[in-house]
Amino acid sequence: MGQGMPVFIGRRRQRGHKIGDVLGSLLCRVVSFLGSRGVDFLKQNRQAAMKNITRTGLDIAKAVMGGE
View 1 (cartoon, rainbow, N blue to C red):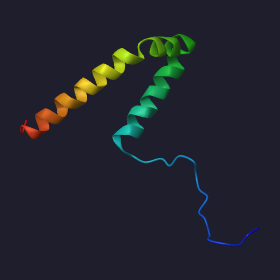
View 2: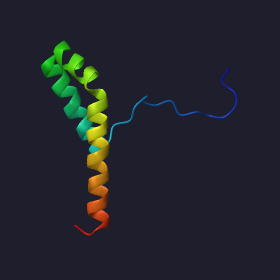
View 3: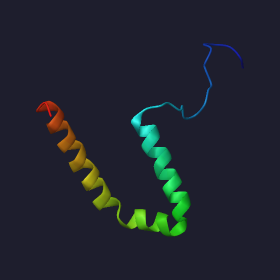
């Protein structure tokens, strides 16, 4: 033990300041506010939410590429 290449062992999940971190933090706060009912609601509506998120992302990408 203790031989070989040194390996960095840090945090399992690094925290940053990008949009994903902001949205993830917001989602965690909403879920904690709503409690188990909120979690059940999100689980039941996961497909619709993903469809809407994907559609919105594509619309934003088209707008950016179109110069809007």
